[in-house]
Length: 341
Image (cartoon, rainbow, N blue to C red; front, side, top):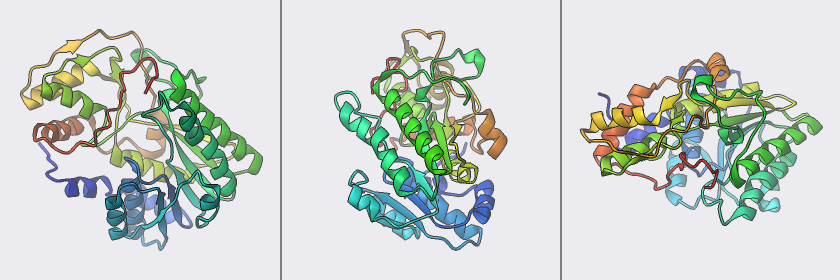
């Protein structure tokens, strides 16, 4: 069973570019600007962009922009050759002062803590995309969205496809749909190529649905079954596909589901993790007939299936959690059926 021993090894693994991304970087002209690069996925994506560009023999700047509340993130990015810019993106003057770039990855947004901070959520998720689209109207933009904009579907359906009508539940999901609508408006009005990535869900060893389930199993806590099914994708694969998607941005804006190809059962995943960790598993609640699910067929057609499959993810997560590996302390709340985060 493969293991990852340290945080340094984990971050090196997560930022390793895929062969498909290296080829894409040969064909993508110009610098890459990553907005909101200080979150869970941003540092790895920025480092991967730089590593892939170097491997492709392409000379480009990769710039990571964030408030960077964690100074350690700046050190790691600079060590990898990524330029960092500290900026509050909601400050219009600071945003307008950022460097130009032909390629923009928009990762800024708010999810957790939405309840009780609805106004700030809408500012980050709906207002900010508009001013970014105005500032970078001449760029190609890939923007992270969320599968939360979909209605619930039955597992047998294979999940929602990109052409399905949205059916958001809760303040967060509505604000994410607003993000999409605002970016669609500016894409059509200004001719800005945009691709909206409906992510659902990314996972590594310090956070994610698999980690949430594994921690419940390891601590002997019941695993909730109300949201009985889910999708997952390893963070390295998600970031590689996100960067490749810059080549598929278009006007009017395109939409792409970003997740793994499987519909997974919470009950079965918990049992698999329990077996790997030598722990008994208990459950609470019962599976509803539907869940928040996305169909990844289009992404798999464009980029191929994720390189890290579910069995390997389960092996890695079970080992990491069993050894008391670091956790960033941000549960996904994937089991929330009311959309309150």
